[in-house]
Image: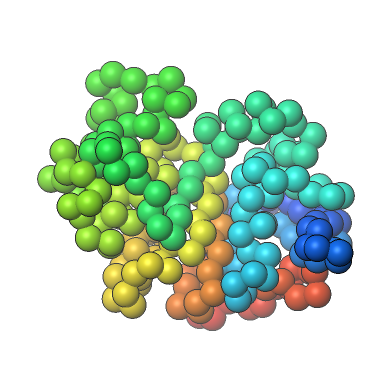
Length: 236
């Protein structure tokens, strides 16, 4: 578990969350009165099968979607109360993303992919490149700075994606099935890397997955049941 957070505001607070979508002539309820708190520096995992609402939760936490009702408070900001522009700037500065399919830009080198989040927050020049190279070294790929993503294995691409998610020093990292496109051995390596790098930097990590191999690393394990977020004791 993380260090004492008694004097620290939670990283995430969801209160009486309501979210549904219209599908044809019926409404599909995703969340109905869902509530949870994730403390700063914790690693929370949301388990569930495809279509259960896991990615919807990440979209809500990133401010890319809005609830029908309720509070989505992230890093002290109630995201539904912000304008679209304010939510975009919030994501750029405070949130890092790791995706299942890596989402590296194929026309940019590894180095250029890492520099992009820094450029979006107006960080350029030698200091930005030093930061990007530092993160690339941390994932043991310092010799691939000039490589294009197509020349990297799937595991290497995801390691670059982990570095990219952290390069602009966000407080919150959101990971959407980050090992879903990797073999079992590589998946475990990426999970341990992501866990180690976020914890060492004091980041809050929220990961959604349908696999249970991550449970042993997490501080908090959640599932979606009848529109609620239900917490289970993590395996130790």
